[in-house]
Image 1 (cartoon, helix red, strand yellow):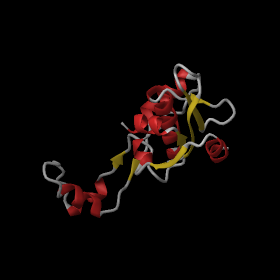
Image 2: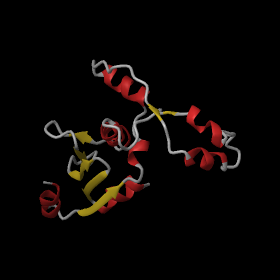
Image 3: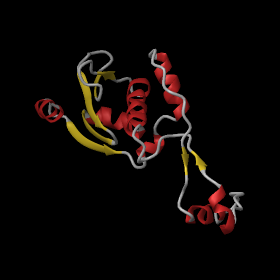
Amino acid sequence: LLISVGTIMQFDFESWDVGAAFLKGFSFAQMDKFYKEKGIQLPKRRVVLKPPDNVWKLLRNIPGSGINITENRIHEFYLDLLKAMYGLNDAPLCWQLFLADFYIKTLNAIQSSYDECFFIWHHETTSNVEAMASAHVDDNGIMATPKWLQMALE
């Protein structure tokens, strides 16, 4: 749909890939708040990760990190996750909701009623379509006027 409409309207096409997208998504606390606003109660949970042993050495070597876990004690420590990371089943959802929130609240998109991963932007005075986007996890297809693309990237 995006390519067909964009071709007809003679818009420019871009692909926006977001590096480390899952780590940029909603935190678990934000997810809970987001769903509560929609009347959905998420189960309470805490996600703890046992990192590979060399992580503690790498963290210890960062100047000013304050991490002084010695090799003989690494088995005693874990990471308490604040956000879903790659590999957790809700990481794509945390990111997708964050992206939709960004498109709607920051870039003033209208989210499709038929496909929650499809967004449209209208010119504020003419109501002409200025841009459309299709989001699939961290890959975004954008078709838009050059002026809109410039504004969005600022």
